[in-house]
Image (cartoon, rainbow over all chains, first blue to last red; front, side, top):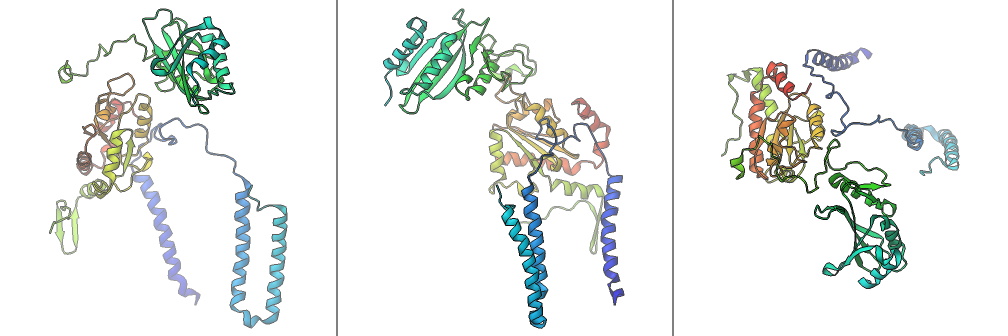
Length: 118
Length: 168
Length: 179
């Protein structure tokens, strides 16, 4: 029954409410001692120069996003593997087509040299 | 095999002329040659690029202040070493304290950069053509040169150290 | 058997509960969890490393997590010679610590310049930051550094929770020109 899951919702709500209320209350009633030097960036005691924004190479993003894609493909294979016998020949061929499409994309990636780290 | 001091001295005499060597000696077997600042860079370049000597390693650079030598108070001493032949020599130059100008050794050795900054910081020797001659070890707004021998050993106006605790 | 229980602060004890003043509990919590910022410069820093080692374990007094960032440190331990060029760095480090904060000055050089009475050495860190406990020695033995920490623990236990708002604290910071 869906209403059996109501206690879970209540528990979730209480947990989130605890975090929110604690943060609001401590920030409002806690002591605050701000100061100009105190709020500056910590750069081991010396004057900090510039900000920390630097351009990051795109290869990190590409590797991560390709990992996610192929990991999701693996996830799709798990329920197929569990019900392999009952899905029969048709299920097998469907999975082959699915993998074939994704491997086509993989071939394209390799040929483009996206995974070449340098 | 280390080259003999006579060979190196002969080459130096040939390079800059015998009259321009102010002094040459061998304390403890280490050839020490004093030259004028204007001949320094050319001489060191010839020593460094010499096919046999190859004095490509400057092991030390430091300043001196000898107040008794009028007209030649502030000086710099360089030590050069040759890896190939395991020879060590020492070069000195002096300049008057009113105009302590010495050409910078960064022309031949990158390691001279910070060493000359330290020498400037402590002795006030101005190195010409140095890329960045500012103080390196002392606070930037110091207006005197601490290692010159013209200061008393103790600060005469200190009030916060009790004399009897320090045996005075 | 050695009784290793901490003595309980004065309070009312009953069946399954213990009531005491909040200041006592906060003081006990603070004193047993002082996270140090080891500002170790010279030889006293090496003695500190020995103190943090397993033989003279400093971590058993709660200083388990040394932090090199002042944002997460309670205790600034200045150990070693502080040159005049290092002065502004030390001062900024102290200013960027969050209250409540304590300063432990370890060794003769940090307390008063030590044997280095020269143009380049700061003659004592109390010229730039307020110091709570001085540990003399050149260098002090680990036992002495631990005693310094125990004295800081006494200060931490007895410090009022609203000290940072007090006039005395504000006057102290004013005298060092710290906002």
